Length: 502
Image (cartoon, rainbow, N blue to C red; front, side, top):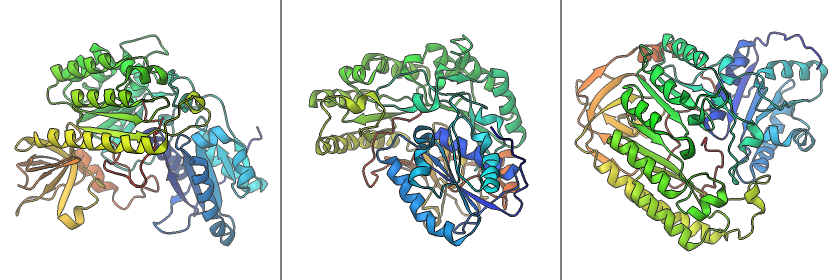
């Protein structure tokens, strides 16, 4: 590899466009941090950036068509702005490699999921040599969390504890693109968390493709539970979350650590994928419905207040009406506070793509709508049980899209439910990161409202950090909350992500 001297990029602007899962969001924060460390500044909203980076996802159907369409739309802007550069990274770049520059020769840099840290050098090399730079490596060079960062929220942060996955789910291409699981040492993770808390962060979300398998690389099956307990000893850390676990590796020591560590939140996102044992076997998911429900029961026994969410795929190859009925039954028994439901679609490169008995699209859609009605009805009932309760809300920036019209402020309860809060006359206005107690007055399937004002307000170091960060460029081209994806009926109907971390 030719060495390149990195010239300062002072005066040049950048924009990062992020697609896909939480790991991509985390990677985009690092991409932004790397570019800012190299002298770039974030382009103003609506402006034309000197460097546009696409951080891609490969697991959606027609993801490549979407990328090439976006690249095509950007070509006139590049032609009108000499010196503009376009980079493509992420899972699709790892998968398609030089195909991108063949189909879109105006792309300057292609980099993979394992070598994010080389982006500034690749941009400079492309500028100096006046030719596209394609560099894909097959194994992780640096954990994303060891790279510079520019976070979206001063009071909350992702912390990557592992990268890659050792599972072989037949619908998922992630292991082929992210590689086998690689774990960070606990001391490194905790050092990063303490450094974040010193900066004003008060909520961290531990992140991994299969987060509760953490420790497999260094041979400690209880490493994840130990890590959760160690987070409880970090002074100033108010809230700890994690995503996403796998039922196969979810053990009772983790449940005990959650229940006994006060700053680990009573929230669990546990991907089900299907309630049919036959479909789970075809998916190569190493658990069955009775084991899944047993985990849910033990979590609720230890943490009765826990909110449990899930992922479900409808229409996996070979799924019969009886299989779908099994899924509905598990949903009724599990009583999820939310479920992220997806229509299966073929992912080239996955074993499921070539399976027989692909379910017709119209059947998948009809089942999807029935499932959505079921999960929304249960979510509404679960949320209605919250009415009259006092909950602690950590206010957030960007969580309530209608806050301006409704005169409310929004944030997350300890169990990660979204809460819209109306201030009473005389209430001090909370900042993002501040904590308040409120009484839930109304429930909807996907949120709670509290219209009686604040019972109490605690101004926090996280709120101070948010206030101090105002006027500083955000880390990427979109706002990203630390909660789960937005719920509701999407248009068009969603497809199976296959990459929902877990």
